[in-house]
Image 1 (cartoon, rainbow, N blue to C red):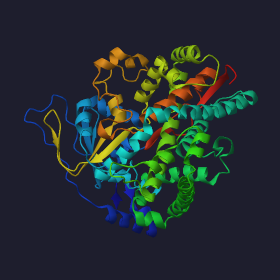
Image 2: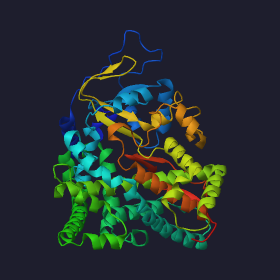
Image 3: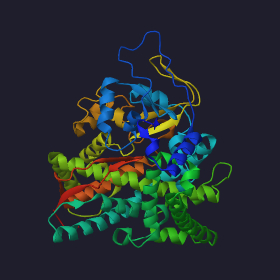
Image 4: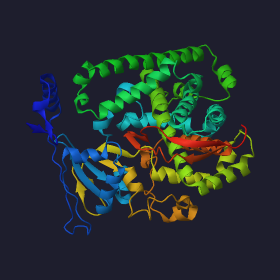
Length: 508
């Protein structure tokens, strides 16, 4: 008996055959996928209306971005496919299609979102409808530039800690360094301080902090579950060793976060807010969430506070670590652009480690290089939503309600119908002149519309601070013997790390 693209059930042990049969029963559904086309069809070729499970997996598994690019060259707007008989998807990567799609309020895809709430709760990342609108409105003031400006010093201090580690490594070894792990810990260090002013020393003591260990291990379990068909069933997953481990680690995270929240609430009730905030010199994200009130005086519940702090913490550090890593890699591959960025930064900062809000605004070429990397390698390669009603596109084609639409940000950013020579690293694409001439929905690293990324300014500040200080003190070159590969686990990050040669330039 062959099933699911060539899997022979007869060769499997009896208990696995039963589990596979059970999971198929749990997930069986037969959505009808069709595309209503205009009477005058577009000139471009029409994509096949379904693909088998093995081919559809190309677009959600590792190391298959080039396959996606081949499809995009053939079908420059969209294509549909199935994951087995269970889930219909429709990929889009055209600016006009993206604009139409993002202008609506369809709910986020449950196919992917079902794996996240146990970890991040029902925060902004998982919410839809009026509840999402209320949370977004209450949280938006927390990302005002007056709040963000105070984080720059925190970010610079954490980057300096990482650079000190690199300096010690460079003094004892002459080989390439796996930098992604260092960058990931540095990003987590920043997020922890900005979220609830917590000094974990995770960059120097990561193996001993149970909270830090739980964060990284939980991420791996979620990604493994996403790509393990059997574990899509809550019943099967909870009964598995990984499910048991997931629940245990989740309790570690939740208890840790709850303890910090309750301690802060007691401090606020005791009137210690002003003293603590002055001591820190900045409002952290927890301060903002606890003090947020709408026009009716309503505030977040304890559950809401926990969810939003978890969302900020867990949703931020991984994507920013990936982005910083890819920026360094692109600059390592393009030394002329790296040197130009370094000269710009040196002209603004001198040889110091301090950095200000105004100085970040002067780094125009460095910013263009950051944006070009985010085009070439978007940390979040796609977003998806379940259509609540038919979706008509500007060319007359219409998608029915009930299917999942995936906006492939990677596909959009590599679409040759949108970008000339899309594989070439060209920061001047983001000169003001070129930006003015481009479709506003051609570049979407932070999505767009009413549900764009609320933390995009925070992200850009951290990217600029990190890249500026790294380039000021180190020259990076690639290790041709260890080229990175993509690991597409919600976040597009280096699969087996990122190895770069580091050359110390100046003291920090």
